[in-house]
Length: 405
Image 1 (tube, rainbow, N blue to C red):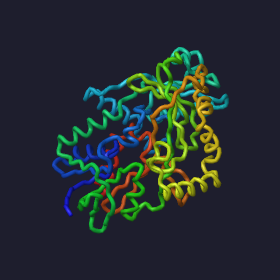
Image 2: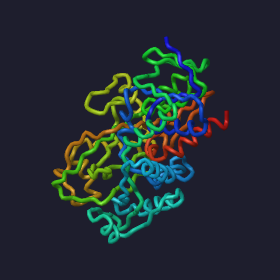
Image 3: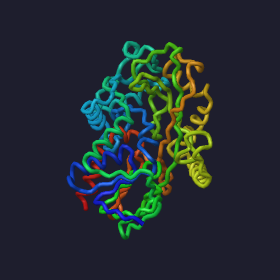
Image 4: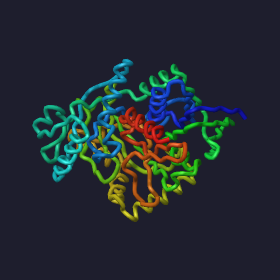
């Protein structure tokens, strides 16, 4: 068995893991840092499947971690892209009510946005038509965020990796953690490496709860994976969108609803759904289905449905119908009335939202969650807008971990 020893070890090479490594490197020049990733490269899961939308902090409760870092994180990542000449597209975003009684939600989102540092304004239907001619508002009002920007998430991951490697950070790909001994500050990997660490950061995303359990901590948390599927807009539809169009969301659940996504290259998608997946990596059909995991997921979903905590039952009914293309198209049509079912085509774009469930409270966690045990730090529920928040959030995680040693 080969043995390695590092001052800092990070499990998972998604955006949070890479930015934590960056923060450690900047704070502790000369420290030995290693990143262990079970896949053979970057971007296989959430970070690489990210839409690239830089969120502004409109949706999140004041004083939450998401609210605290969203607007700042967006600026930092855009600056990072400009520094390294990575593609960006500042296109703006509108948030529109799809029901006539949602004006109070518009006001709440505006208040949150202002308090969280976003640049936004309330506009009327006439102004909406000038900004986004294809969009509609059910109440006659909407929110406009002129600075909303889209980046290339995979390009960001690759640039961060390059920067880290130049500074001596070690990457171990195809290196899955299979056992841990927190009493000895060590773990073993699938390829028979024994690793000793001074401090360990678990940023394993869709597997972060399982990693935490190996270290005998955070056992009240478990993952509920939700599949986000998209349809792409056919060019033949002649529907031209200037920017991003989002609905006013149900703020009781941590999902934003079907919206438009416009990539830096110009392609337009609608999505995502938020339907339960049968495994942590169940992207397509039965691929990635895990029978034991599927049984656990079904059990926890059944409890959520029965309790109807956070309005989960109503949301489940709504999302279940979106397996059907016509029902999905209806949700998109509420944003863009000109859109018809035949304007959408199947897309390979799909992601898994690693949504955390607290099995004690029986509620979905709405914010990022950091769980510390001895010399390990477990970043749980690092879902959207984690990519946007990543740089300042990573600094927060590192400073909190090292300043309180």
